[in-house]
Image (cartoon, rainbow, N blue to C red; front, side):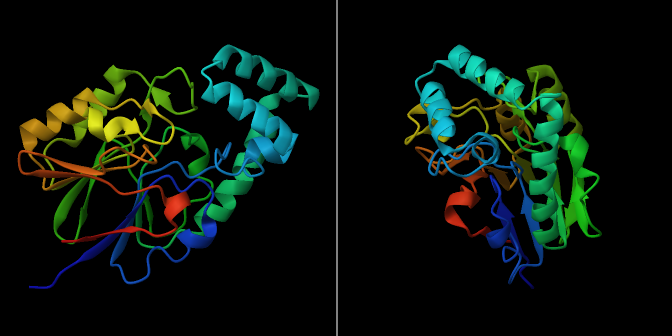
Length: 258
C-alpha cells in the first residue's frame, strides 16, 4: 500500500523564500492561511506597518498592543495612516497586493488553501495559479481521503481583517460535515492548544470545531494560528489534533503521511 505525503503550513506571514521549497518531497501542499505580514513581533523592521512608517513606530505600535492598550494603538495607527494622505485602504491594499504577488508566485502546486484571520480573501482571486485550490466551508479529495477546510478567525479585541461571527464560522464547520482530515486556521476550543507561552495569552478557538471533532471523529484535525502553543497536539477520542507550526518562524512544513 502506497503512502501519500502531504506537507502542511500555516502562518506563512511573508516567508515566500521558504514557501517555494515547502512542497519538496510531498504529493500535495495544504496551507492554512495567514499569508501576509502586517507587523513582526520578533523583528520590528519587517512587515507592512514598518515598511510604511519605520521600525521605531512599529516598535511603539507593538508595545501598546502587547500591553493591551488597544485604543491607544488604534489612535496611533489612525494618525499614521492619515499622514499618508488619501484613503488608508488604498495604501493597505497596495502593500498587501505586493506580498500576495510574491507569496502566490512561490506557492507550490498542487496546493489546497484556506484563509487565515489576517488575510484579505477578496484579493486572493487575482493571484491564485493553476493547481491552487482555495476552499472555505468546502471539501476536497486528496489521495483518496476527504479534507474539509474552514478558514478565518473569530472576533477578538485585535480586530484582524478576517474575523467572523461565531454563527458564520459554525455554519462553515457544519457545511464541511464528516471528513477524514479537518483543516482550520484556528484550533478547536481546547485551552492547552490556545495558550501562547511567549505572548502569554489565550487565543480564541472554535467551540463549533470542537463539537464537530467529538461528533464526527476525523483522523486528524490540523490548524495553526497559535505560534508558540502550550501543547502542539492532543487527542480527542480517535482524532489527533495537531498544530502544524509557525511557518514564518520554522521555515519548514509539517509532514503528514497518509
